[in-house]
Amino acid sequence: MLQLSAAITNRPVMSLRTGGQVATAVTPIINPDNLKIEGFYCNDLFENKELILLYQDIRDIIPQGIVIDDHNVLVEESELVRLRKVLELQFELIGKPIETVDKEKVGKVGDFAVETGSMTIQKLYASQSIIRSFTGGSLSIDRSQIVEITQKRVIINELLKRAPLPAAGIA
Image 1 (tube, rainbow, N blue to C red):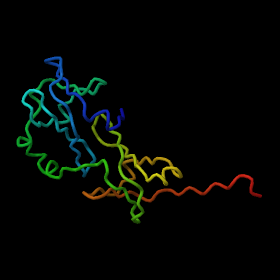
Image 2 (cartoon, helix red, strand yellow):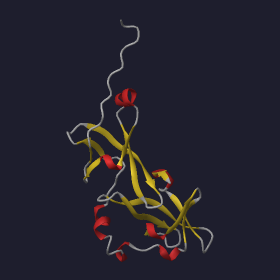
Image 3 (cartoon, rainbow, N blue to C red):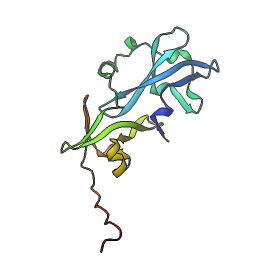
């Protein structure tokens, strides 16, 4: 099921064992190579420190928050050797400029949709300038349109251009 980023960020992390909240999932850890959410930075409620929740430890995402088995699945960053390169990137997707292959500016990433079963980002939603948003509306970009993702921008294939509508009443 696709969910917007707001449904998975700044959400309570609920433990099945204790039946209550054990942390808050603050921001996703995104791997820019495959647009997969590898986990979440979490604020631990017990020790008041930052821990990481890996995506494979998530049981379910419900309206009340993210469900896990127990608090002990939250780990410190130093324990995650395989994810070290991704963690060092500190990749942020929201706010990243979007350009076409021909360097045409499209807008900035305003939001994204995640397929919660595999935790892969399927769509990007571009925030455009005020003038562009009046003429073209919002823009949805499927992951198949993405050519490259760098630390500075998202590069996509060329957009289809719409033909201008004829003015009404002109003969």
